[in-house]
Length: 168
Picture 1 (spheres, rainbow, N blue to C red):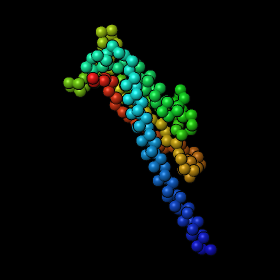
Picture 2: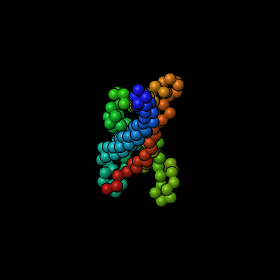
Picture 3: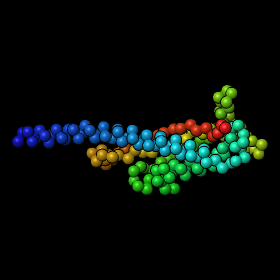
Picture 4: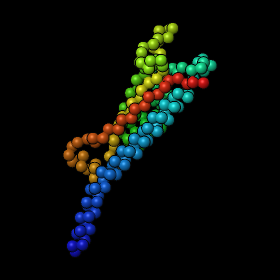
């Protein structure tokens, strides 16, 4: 009888010890999936540039507004998100995407404001920041945070710097 009690106690302690390890593995997996989606969506947005007037140049310019629209559309398609960036299948919480365009001078590597002949700002790179609150996977951790009234303390944030030119 003591042996059975020790078995139950051992199973309980193992589940308490392994539950955070499984959550850490889930966080690592979700970070990798978000990184892959970020890279794929930004590459698709750059490569599907429709402005053929610049394609003959040595460095083709990419229109920032088109890039942003295509990036957001590709990112939504990869994770099957609705228009508010909430997951339709429930695997992720709502995503927050912030794209900051900038013009970086190649000679002195400083960020500057540059306008074209029509007076519009010209950008040659942007910083993309994607963040979401991690959705807990194991029942033990879900129950803990529900009973304590706290939300998930894990916020996954991934940042990528994307060049908005194509060198021929």
